[in-house]
Amino acid sequence: MIRIFNHYVSKMAFILLLLELLMLLASASVASALWFSDGQGHFRADNLYLSSLTFALVIIFSMSALGMYQHSSREGIRTTLLRIMPSFALGFALLSALIAVRPDFYFGRGISSVIFAIGATAVVLTRLVVFKSAESALLEARLIFVGSGAMARECIELAQSKAGFHQFSVVGCIPLPGETCCVAASSLLPQGESLLTMARRYEVREIVVTVTDRRRQDFPVRQLLACALGGVKVIDAATFFEREACQIRLDSLQPSYLIFGGGFDQTYWRAFVKRVFDLAASAFITVASLPLMLIAALAIWLDDGGPVFYQQERVGRDGRIFRVLKFRSMRRNAEEGVPPTWATTNDPRVTRVGRFLRLLRIDELPQMVNVFKGEMSFVGPRPERAYFVQQLTGEISYYNVRHSIKPGITGLAQVRYQYGASVDDAVQKLQYDLYYVKNNSLFLDLLILIDTVQVVLLGKGSR
Image (tube, rainbow, N blue to C red; front, side):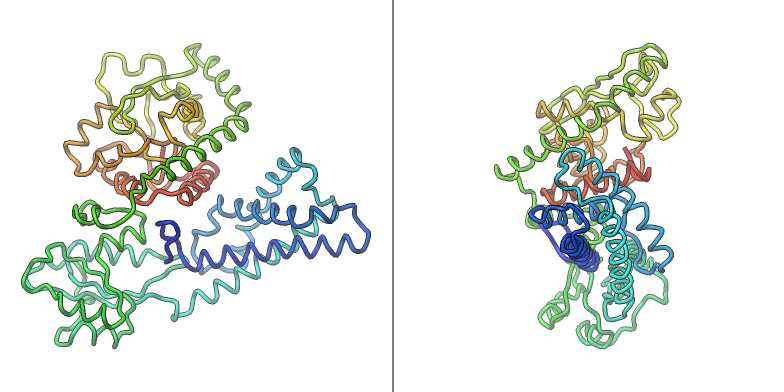
């Protein structure tokens, strides 16, 4: 993994993206130059590189939106082709819309077909080469876990679930005396030699410390120091989860990790960049979705004749109360006379039209007004009702940390976790929210925006 603006990304996925960007640029540039030199088209040479870059970026965005940089690296030619076809179809639709606004980006009918064909072929060949390289054992990260408790078991499960571009080989666990063993006996490593000797014998790249109580006398602090000095990376479970799952785990979290762990960029520059991004993204989506919003408003009114919009008090930054604006998706007076309740996936209070609006996230679009007013950001933790905030703050440690920044229309928890309807779900989503609060950046906002497009197109994630 590599860290870009505080966010961890797969090194192999990043290399693949760069290679495909170069291949798409080359495909468009070379094909256009040859076509132009033969005099078969009317493409303007001064737009060659700008049009080629636009083509490459749109295709990369389309592949990202359809999850082409998140899936397993062990797929064959047939699966690769099936994934690329809809990505290029989406790219063609986006380019067509862009050309309608900027006709000078148009390559020409004949050359466009050639460019798409060459680009798709180049992407397939690039992926086959990278995927074959990713299967090499030399690229596997070999791990040893210090500890054999519940946290070690969860770390092993996370490491074994990494079936994509970044893969692990778990060597085993080093148990400590008196610790409750929660891993399989076959995962326990024999005792008798130092950690550094063991790491070198098994060619281990990294040691993950899963022991929460590091003040115990038998904690191998000197051996871990020897490993670090000997070139073997040593990290704790909290860092492992933050890096591999984009979570800050509450059960392994210590206050010192948040205080001294870096991140939490709240500078004026970050606030300025985020505000510009919020306004730009919200303005673009508002204009692009205006016809859709008009149709949604008409459908809500025709369904039961009730109000089109719905407002509800939510908790924003620093605990301030504001009224969030949404398309009404529940029947009129759905909560009249009853205390606030968690919304569920198949909530009986949801109308027929509302169920469709929720499925495609259309009911969230009016919240652009809250973004323009400065009450929300485009990306951030989802705002919760004061009734539930009071309850969750009392039951979940660090819950109020999520209120140190503005809430968002979409967020990391929304694209990584399913629909939340309980305190346990709130804990799981908070772990993603804490990661975002700690590591938020424009780069991460753009990635979440792309993931949101994927959620809407493929129906994954949460609300």
